[in-house]
Image (cartoon, rainbow, N blue to C red; front, top):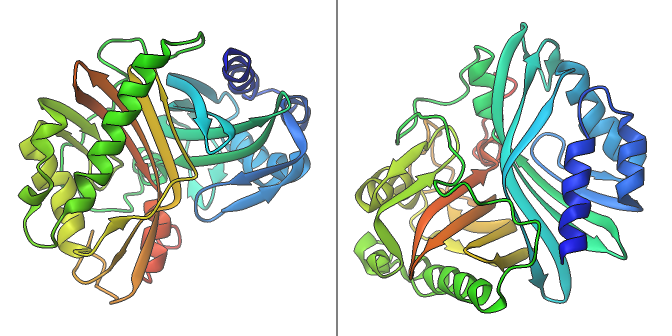
Amino acid sequence: MTAAKRLVWDFWRSLRGGAETELVIAGHCSADVEWHGFQPIRRASGASDVAGRVWAPLLDAIGDLERHPYILLGGEFEGSTWVGGTGELAGTFSGTWLGIPGAGRSVRFRFGEFCKVEGGRIAEIRMLLDLPDLARQAGRRLLPSSSGRDLPVPGPLTNDGVLLCESDAAESADTLGLVETMIFDGLNRYDGHDQASQDLERFWHDEMAWYGPVGLGTSLGLEEFTSNAQGPIVRAYPDRRGVGHVARIGDGAYAASTGWPSLVGTHEREFLGWAPTGEVSRWNIMDFWRREGDKLAENWVLVDLVDVARQAGVDLLEQ
């Protein structure tokens, strides 16, 4: 697992402004690497396509782009080796990307990424960005003010989230087990009416922190989490439920998961200003957790809200 984590770490450090993008990707990834990402790019295949459709346009717009990860972990899921992480992309937004004009502003926006490693190469990449936050920093607000706190998202309070070495297997299993119980015996027990039906106090510290994307924001403490993070979602999508993961891993005191989709629910009420459609919405999500003792203390969450808006009939980037 150490070799897989160091492969991804080196890939992240090498892929930056001024780099030979396609050569870096080809040097770390398999020839037929599959990239699954955010709206509107969604998918690319092979090093040339990933370079040309995903990274070259972004690096043209932010020529001094740097990646600042504050979490990196690895693990096995259903027979595959996965390395996941989150942090910030930062640089000077001088060009235009995805229709968003940068106007020379300095930006810092969140990324989440999962890489499947096979035979010493990255065979598959899943990536999400907080595009509404990037647009907000560039002077274009795509979403209303967050239901939670609009605060810069920090790394782990313990400053120990980059796990390049092997972790204790029992500790890793404890963390993943707590997360899985919280999801399947907590979040998925929501009865469609009362959030208390999830009994989340069993799994979370009272002073937990939930770091969500722009539009939902940060929630500090369980009360804020249930009212400001969960509340808008379960009101708008009352039958929402988790439907599985592409990857779910634990490493020391950290765990992470991603699903394509990770959550589905019927859009029955207004959400972020979008009128209900009555249709099932599918959310691509990444979660990263830190355990402290026998409960969860911090949770970093990325959601492709541009894609959720698309499913509600709203083109955030066009507007």
